[in-house]
Image (cartoon, rainbow, N blue to C red; front, side, top):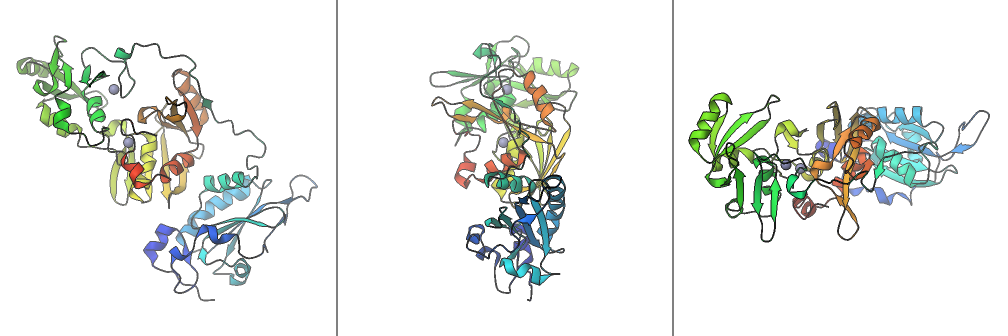
Length: 430
Ligand SMILES: [Zn+2]
Ligand SMILES: [Zn+2]
């Protein structure tokens, strides 16, 4: 059999290599699998326990030592073989070195993974790179208890441990932080007003409105004069744009430019008019949802040779869905700030450091009783479940559930371009 790699670039994106000349990667699909070959690799004799000869389900990966997605699967297969030996058998066949061994499976692309039950019946096949979480998820779906009977034990909190008793006027509409009198920012609506913790949250708010007209919007905004606490139209104020000890911008508003200049002497920063402040604040955006972000608050996302930001951890993995590109995410543990690194390949997790890292999906109950996202400020990644539990301890009003980072990514990969265009927009966040 002559084996040919078709269109090297497309192959890396698809994550699979065509086996026959003239066959393009798109001609193969994962659902055409069930009619395929009998299960020559079927149920295998493996020890489920001392002295036992019970048959186990089996995963066969057909690939080659030199194909890129195959190489990325090698450590995953090694881990599965090591950690789940009592649950299912994991086998690798190199079809370039050993074409005869691969023939009975009738595959057209590599890598291809075939799932067999304990009797040798084929249950499912997948073409292309398949991440560890996805493989374990598939086993679960196929009824194989990959957890080995140990309860998964994900944290779920459907009702608050304690209600948030802060008055609505004291809580930022966007970020949920306490509002300080000196930086309070108010947006007048038709019937109600939104209270925000400061101008930065206003620009997040503005960038979360579908089709916002900044000129029409800005006439509704007022800020507090830093010295007197009096209300000032946002467009009329002068802003002292400084920096806190961590390098994060600070914004102080002044009705009077002279007062701003005076404050500048003791508190360094640039004096800006509203228009300049706006363009500065809107310059850096979430690469998934377009919200204004400060890099200091955001997750780093690398795609190709470009760096961008995700305004929250879930948005950061969503960049893979929006750009249809493999990405690398650098997120901070919500509790300790420890780094969590996620690499994606073909819309799936290619690597996760540390491997114990998990996600919190902050959710709230909508008016119709269904669960919906609680928004970007209520999401997070954690290096382990223990850190998540501690983080939740000090957030008694928080509701939601623990999910895997693979799940966070797969939730985003399911979105259509239309849904992505509305992602995280006010009133549209799902
Ligand atoms: Zn806020
Ligand atoms: Zn975002």
